Image (tube, rainbow, N blue to C red; front, side, top):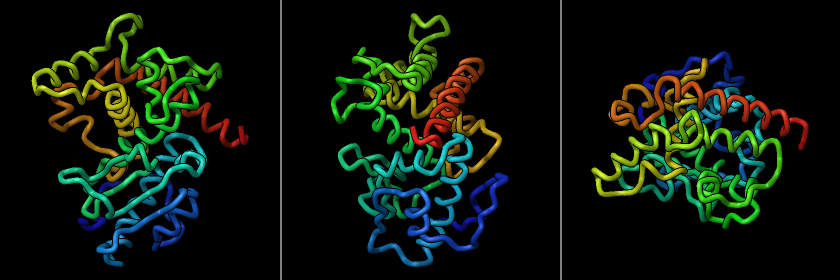
Amino acid sequence: MPSNRQFYRRSPIARQQQRVTFGDIRRRFDFRSVSIGRWVTEPEQERAAGLFYDALVDLMAILQGPENLISLRSTLSFQYGIGGRPGISAHYDLSQRSFSLAKNAGPGSIAHEWFHALDHYLGTKAFSDAPQQMFASQAWLKDATPVAHPLNDLLFKCFQAIMLDEAGDQPSELFQISSRVDRDNGIVYYSQPEELCARAFEAFIQDAAIRNNFLVKGTKESEEAKMGLYPQGEHRARIATAFNQYFAALGGALRRGA
């Protein structure tokens, strides 16, 4: 992994201790489990743990939530240097409810994959008939039966802001561009609801006052951004408003123990 100096962070939150471990991460956020690959050296662990810890602290601050939001109420596991996929620095495993970083993980992938974990976690919470393996964003698009709750109403507004136009009756420009790119590439990837929503979440996090490019990067200057695969302009602002309302309410509910 590159040295910490290669990652930019602007945050008012200073780390209380100079050195943190993956054990500190598990205890603070109460992850269900944390596993480290056998080929990860102690210096590599220390560098990665510090970067990941700071990224999660910043994510928690941006989302205005407590620690158990990050671990999804202790249901989420974390792996470092285990089960990597060629060319992929991070991924979320639906079957294991596990978020993984490759040993030589590049910066900027955490926000995207963490949102996949949240989206999956909410599938059966926000919809009464969603299968265990279905993301909430998929269930919303498939008109699954919603569970009546004010938080779910705010979540659905996020999905609507991302996937539909401002009037709410046509596909958004983000969806249309993503579908066109998929057609050109002969795949179905960018236009999947879970991918649309994860990229929209990345944009929301990168636009926050707290900056951490180990947490997120690439929603403005990357090739994907130049292709229009991240929300732009007024659409981006509308999504940010919806996410802000949802996470402010969710954080408040979690702090109250709701």
